[in-house]
Amino acid sequence: MNAPTTTPEAVAWHLQGNWAPVFDEIEAGPLKVTGEIPKDLFGDYVRVGMNPRSGHSDHWFSGNGMLHSVQLENGQAHYRNRYVRTPYYEADMTMMSGMFDPAASPANTNIIRHAGQWLALEEAHLPWAVDRDLNTIGAHDYGGKLTGAMTAHPRECPETGELLFFGYQLARAPHLTYYRVDRAGQMVEAEPIDLPNPVMMHDWNVTRNHVVFMDLPVVFDLGAAMKGQAPLSFKREAGARLGVMKRNGAKGQVRWFEIEPCYVFHPVNAYEQGDKIVIHVCRQQQAMVGGFSNLYGGEATTGKIWRWTIDLAKGTVSEEQIDDAASDFPRVNDSLVGLKAQFGYTSSLNERAPSLTLGQYLYKYDLDSGKKQVRDFGASNHLGEPIFIPRPGAKAEDDGWIMALKHDEAIDQSALVILNAQDFDGEAVATITMPRRIPYGAHGNWMSR
Ligand SMILES: [Fe+2]
Image 1 (cartoon, protein in one colour):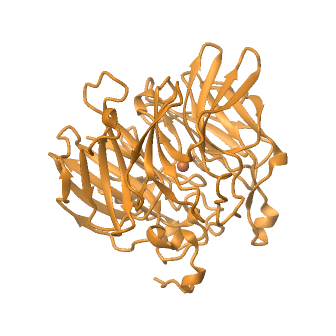
Image 2 (cartoon, rainbow, N blue to C red):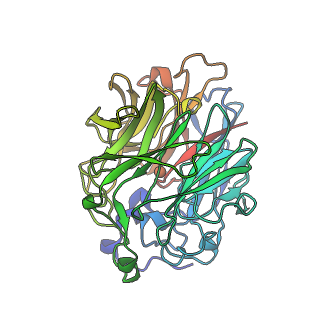
């Protein structure tokens, strides 16, 4: 294993401070708790992040995936972390060297559970199955039916239990494929879709009857990539479109709607209302204006909550900004994915920082009114994705808890905070001190038992 060879001045933002990787794989517990962990919380909070094993990676996106889990049981918490051991990890690959092997996933972007299977995801490769102890099982290709990439943002339909996802590939056509997996984990539909440009399609939308693709102009340039230049850049002139397709049996038939060029890493949620599809998103004016490696370019590249309303009868899209606060990593109550959810939860971003910086606030949006509640953790704290966990037997949408990792840079300490979602700015239900620094990362989920 190589030590970092760069001088401190040359260290990229994604390798500094609490973005920097940790190397040991440990188990620890019971962990120190301030407050009380609800006894109803029985399961695993699991999050993945970019954690280059060599200490260096050529891009934030390309670090090896490391899983962190906090197991909650009887009011106690235990911690564990493990790398996902894919060929990308074993051969210490890079974004470019790993590009043409579908199994060579960094597995660093999301961890989900579907049909009892835990899958570690990164959007340019196959999913990787792992077990509850975070041991790597192997690439998961749905019995050979999945031959290419799977998005890191599939959606499980709360009504049918299906897993809906897409895969995009940059270097050759089809640039986009849609997949539907039944609740038992069997792939039942795979449809190639025409797309004019090879674009980075990080996330998407589902509703009760439709899926909505986002063809947004972060465009791939193979020639530039082969010359070692930026493989992806924001090209406003390529335009932007939303593609509405029936969830079942559409045979790739998509109805496209032009929108203002922009970029969206993450939608909050989408739902149908008569002939309309309403989508809330964390919308950026642009992407990668700070360059491919820096990603960040201040205010133009942070997400703000917008609402898109697609009118299927009139063939129009209206676009309206709901709030000007910068935030991303949106979540809703997962039982309302694709249905009308009133509340969306996001983590704030600090627009005054020179590189991508998680902020000190969590937000709870009323998506109807656009009003938000602000939870302030203090200036030295940086908050990750807020996950909603329903209380058993809950009647109200927000009857449950918010879980998020935070890192206090003043004391270099990470903690998992648990909030009462209905008392969003009140006293935390529990703050669980992590036995080690947990680097800022990507997405996670609550795996109830
Ligand atoms: Fe994401």
